[in-house]
Length: 276
Image 1 (cartoon, rainbow, N blue to C red):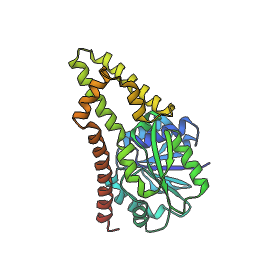
Image 2 (cartoon, rainbow, N blue to C red):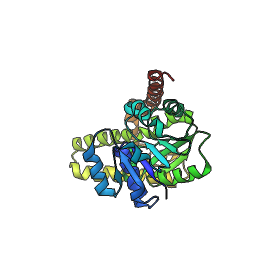
Image 3 (cartoon, helix red, strand yellow):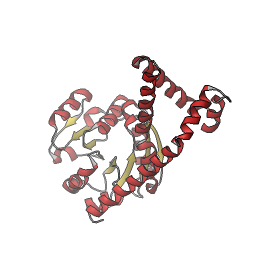
Image 4 (cartoon, helix red, strand yellow):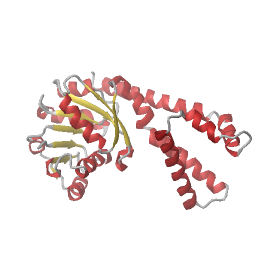
């Protein structure tokens, strides 16, 4: 039975552990967790999921076959340097660190490793993440089957080239926040037009769910689906004209491009900071 060690016990680690345990991918007693200093969080996760926790690296890495790097990116250099002596060629490293390249992980570890770099999003908490995976040449087919199985417990997975992960970050990694931003605007407008907050929230959530389902199930392009709802001289057309007058579509395009550019900048800054 494989042993997994999580370095970091934040919300993404918890979502993945929940998915692994619930789907019985690996027995909870073979999942070990640690973090920088929050022992209360470790105890809470131990009670909730039946996992093991420790601050002793010898215990954490004993017989570990998979190591998740799930700390905050700003803590990555220090954390990887601290555990590098425990990372061997037989261990699969899975990183969910935004902006930290595979070669940066290997240089911090001072050795060649089998590394999977994953970019999930916060919807992993409800099993609806869109996760992109990038790998290096030391990751085997067997590794990938297990990694895919793990990430499928929290949503959809797709494999991309590492160079595309910045774009994935800008599009789907940050994507939930764009939808929440839209929902905020819809809630504010609902109050202005005379709807109670509770009623508006139900209508907004169902509208977003329905539109997502249509995009998922229909073979039609988004533009065609939009046009089918937009009758000449109708209410939808009136609303769309306002959005167009404010160049909302262009704003969303620029938003995703800028998020992608920021991901690239963060990666370069991390590399420069550790001189890789």
